[in-house]
Amino acid sequence: MSLHDDAVLVLKDYEGQDELRQVYLDHLAAHPDGLWKACRDGHITASALVVDPTRERVLLTLHGKLRMWLQMGGHCEPGDATLAAAALREGTEESGIPDLALVPGGPVRLDRHHTPCAWHLDVQYAAVAPTGAVEAISDESLDLRWFAYHEVADVADGSVVRLLEATRARL
Image (tube, rainbow, N blue to C red; front, side, top):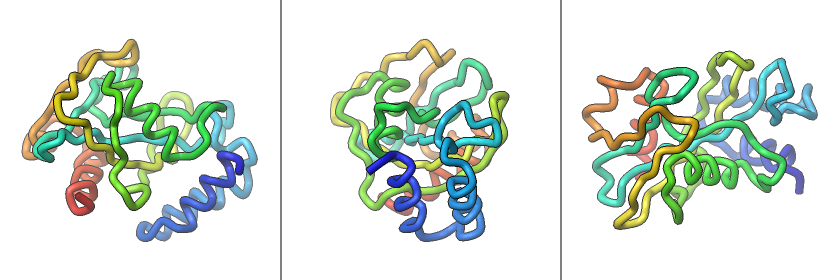
């Protein structure tokens, strides 16, 4: 199965955010290249909110280009077999933490936002870090830091806060 086919299936199975979910499905129907950065009309991206093993904190990255505290995530790559795999790869690359475990149940949220390259139609997952995990900053980040749940609204925008709320409801 192609990544495009996987994305369609994941989105068809996703419950909630019906109007936005349909925007994603319509985008994929109109754009066979709709998962790739080269698609200037926008593209599907995948992200993962990394939660500590005690489920009291989340790891956010200070994005190098956007200069905002965000969850780990980004563009799909040709080697990604599934959206979940893309989210896990991005989470691992940007956090430096191996052996992240995606929270069961598929995506936690969808979030559409404009970036300098195009519209991102982000499929958002949550991942739990293993006990004893040590984060390591990547080249894409200016900083990497754990935040208690109650601190997130003070540093991140509403999309991250909504992702955190949906993640907590799923945990």
